[in-house]
Length: 162
Image 1 (cartoon, rainbow, N blue to C red):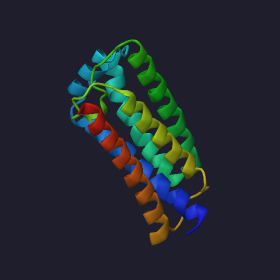
Image 2: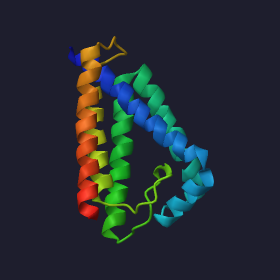
Image 3: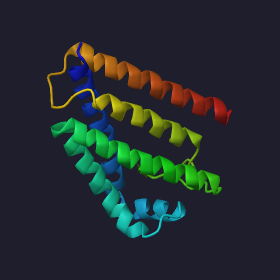
Image 4: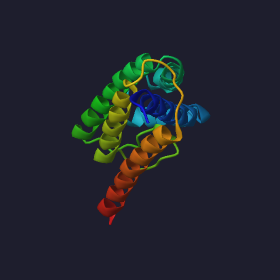
C-alpha cells in the first residue's frame, strides 16, 4: 500500500461518484431543472445542463490529472455545500437533485455531511500527482473507508426518520 496508490484509488472512486451524479442529472434534465428551481437556483435551466457537464469534466481531470481534478472537486463541493447550507438556513426543504431527481427526500444536514465526506475524499486524492497503479490493498483501503462512512450516514438517516 502506498500513498500514491491510495490517492489514485480515491481519485477513481471520486470520479465514479461524480460520474453517477452527472449521468443521473443528464438522464432527466427537465426534472433536474425543476429540482434546481425548487432549491431557488437562479437560471435553473442553464445550471441543469452546465452542472453535469462540469461534473463530467471533473471526472476526466480526476482520472488524467488527479491533483487538478481534486482541486476542481474541492471547489465544486465547497460551492455545493455552501449553497446547501444557505438553503437549509433559509428553510428550503426541496429535493437536492444532487444525484438527479431520483431522490425525493428534501435537503437535510445529511447532504452537508455527505459533501464534507466527499471533500475529505478529494483531499486524499492530493496524495498522488499522476495516475498510478492501484494495488488491491490500496483499493480495499479506499472502499472500506467509503463503505463505513456511507453506512454510518445511511444509518444516521434511518435513526433520524424513526
